[in-house]
Image (cartoon, rainbow, N blue to C red; front, side, top):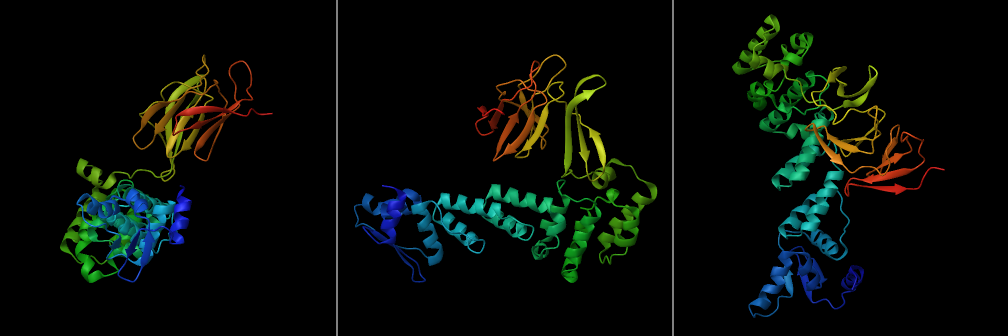
Length: 393
């Protein structure tokens, strides 16, 4: 019998053999076999009495969960979906975790993840930490770091503890175009409640990479801030020496000059230079307006290839090394600068046109060393497989 049929029976209260009740008056006729198959929690309750030879349990009272939330969980058990919004998703996820309804937990986590924004990412991060939702915690944290200049304007930013703010502002991946933003964040946080938060200023000032702050800003803004602790004043005296003498000791350079990881970077792979193909990789940092030569090389010398980004990975496809035309594809992970070889295309192609759509990569046309191609194919990353598609007219 289909799940839709079972749900129709539930809605019409037909052949139901159990009921779930809540303290606020909710009462839900159910089929015990459906809920027992859906959750170990329900299975244990409805089957333990049978295993012990006791009378069957047909009624279950669930405390500390509202009838609205229990109704959503039951609907999900029957239909694998339920209506959820940001105002009830946290309560639903907590209840689902309590009742061992893992599909509902994953459903809620995916919903929250899709709806993370600068105004709710901090509460989402704290929620995920509290309930050990690691994937959601990582995604919320990344959103905070990526959008810190907007996040620091939100009401949630004021709720961070000193230790949480220290962790955030110390992060190498914090996406700030100028280091001055870090001090602005500290100032904004302290001024919410100066009497109680001034004591944390010294701790927070260590997060500022002063070597990346302009001398003008340091003198006009940071030095004029009303620091009320001796630790803060001592730290700034040390920074004064750094600016006055250009101190180059390793400790100072590591703490105060170390750049943060760029958030917006352009990569170039190979190409034609000085009359031959190359394997050089260069990166462009938008914040510093500079090109950098990478220590990592392409896996092979090539030119006339295609490059595309998909799911935070960079795919280098096809190309020509001056003697051979390629059907190969290599995947570059910019987070750890590692390469992985992927499935080859069906045809060798240089000058190939590349695009992505619905999570797949399309390779269209190109040149195989003998003729221009009208063939096309698409790549599925999950299957690591290329499939031929309709040719060009």
